[in-house]
Image (cartoon, rainbow, N blue to C red; front, top):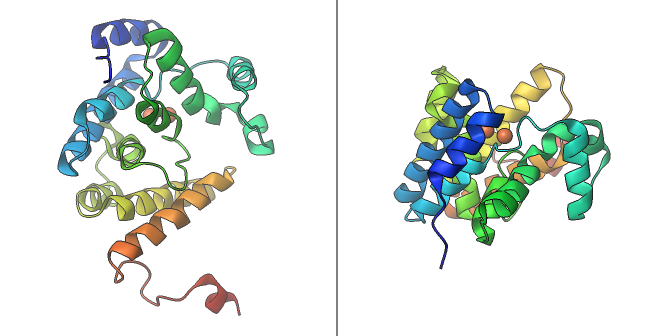
Length: 212
Ligand SMILES: [Fe+2]
Ligand SMILES: [Fe+2]
């Protein structure tokens, strides 16, 4: 059984460490992840807990994020070392466990997976990954509205399209791309197609066919 999270304690902790605009985003992720979980018959309370804590370490300094990752024995690669901010997802899971006593593996994983995703992540992780991008305060562009629509059609297709949305942004802004984002994208596309073979690109070609 999962111990109930002390939401007021989390909000008080966040208010000391996170700017107001980010709190609005966090509450949006809490709500949206919970809504998605309910829609897909998952544990709504777990999704809301993961959403509430997902960005707890968002404003931790790079050096602290690296220290926490090393102490935790997390595998670091060149992209993470150059951009420790990406570690805020793992660090937020550590905060959830150490500050707020969260022991549920699925909640901790959903927090840790919210930025880069992970192949074979749980459906609960998928809800938080998607919610991080589509929660209401992110805006109302046509792309976001399309993602919101997709999010209630097919969970894996929504993860794939959310990954594509992030990848496009990273390419356009000439940012580094962590390889796990690509692995998450391909896994989610594969899962979506396994459920609904008509999903995917219009050609249906594999990468081997396109490059040969
Ligand atoms: Fe985040
Ligand atoms: Fe976030």
